[in-house]
Length: 339
Ligand SMILES: [Zn+2]
Image 1 (cartoon, rainbow, N blue to C red):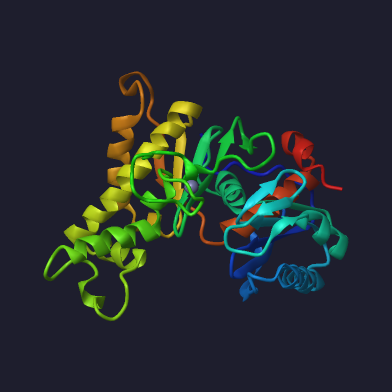
Image 2 (image 1 turned 180 degrees about the horizontal axis):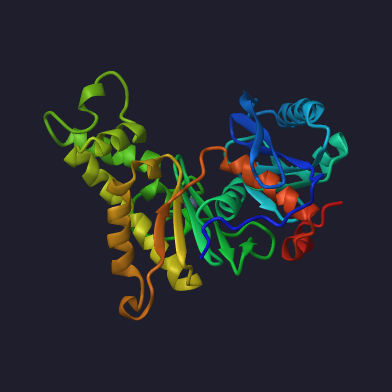
């Protein structure tokens, strides 16, 4: 299988596409050509998460600034952290921003006059991976950072469920009798057990139980241990940090086993800050996954890889979704119906 599926050509005068990644505190944006190559990447701009109007204005200003330098931009794609109706591009709710029942696609299209698509940011990052990184017709992309999220590609299509709010991988129930309550209000979700904050919590608990040492010892007394501290310590070979990453990997492996049991994906790609730990995370994920996947002896186990895309995957994937609508790619155009 070719790991770099080439994009269908749009011809010699192919236009460019603009992507935005709207997070809780900042917006990343840039322009790609028809092959998905980055033409320009803007420095991220802060946006006031509590003010929907200000966030919208910041997004429009970014689009106008990029469009002034790339007048051949033919469409805009936006990835947003939150529950997004597809293809309407209406943000039902967003955990870290002011967007509530916001018809962002229509608002941006009206403000810029450009065809626009709006999707969940994990979906757009998944699409970037599928298009430009590790790729398979059936694959799952799992991001492990401040939260746990992801996307699914099934039969070479981004799977969104009936309305667009599916594949909330971080909210798979893996431990309903546990003690950690998720930000969504439920006890048992994968996210509070396998995210960066979970890693920091495991480290803090271990630190509290010993007189000295541990991955947070160098910073103890000055600031709280972070997931990044633990990841860095694990990469340096710290056995305690590796044990804490293994706890995260254990829960991730359970979640991934469920994904494989349900969807028979042939590839799992891990992204996000915690995945940057590399093999100290991949090994326990693989061990846990192989323990919990069903009929292990009678199936071909999927590849487990680290993402090939960087932190720009969210906006690049969004731009590629806009590009796919423009190129009338048979399956996606039905769903994107760019107007
Ligand atoms: Zn949850």
